[in-house]
Length: 240
Image (cartoon, rainbow, N blue to C red; front, side, top):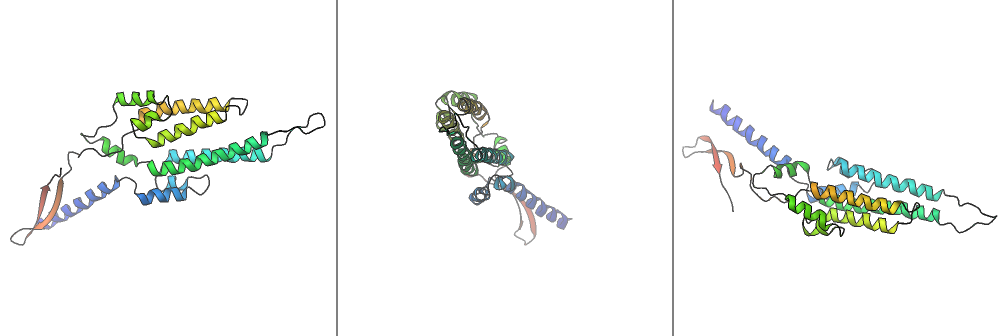
């Protein structure tokens, strides 16, 4: 019976170790790997394969695909002839520049998302710890209010650089393209920035591990006693 019990202890220890490793955050190597694979245009392979980040993969597909469609439209654009003369028409060039802009945004998003996206299981593990302090309702409202100056609340209150950069890109793009597509594109991008501010302010979670869980410090070990017999031991230790 003792052999069976010791075997079960070993099995339990191995299982606990596997469960603990499952909830680790992404390593620097995994983040660089995600970034590198995402360089393959448009598919978000790194986000899908390494991080299993469906949202990131979808955004990569959307940005690259939109840019490709606009670029093709710009390359195939034929200016209209008026009064048997070819007036200066910069619409094709505007399409081309806008397509490159979407591709550039995809590159920036790849850098920011690969560096800042956290393993959802790791975040869930932190949120379940009794002493873990997430952002308060007041902090979330404060972030939302300060972001009337794009990104200010995200940086000052939440230290959320990914959220701030996204707002800067959206608002900057809205200002830059305020006259594009009969003046509708600029306001649309600014409205998207406002919607993103609302969503990000009230859903972004604090990534730092600020507290021990109630089971931290317990260690199950199998060691020989003073008579040389192997015995299971349950140890507890805390470091402050």
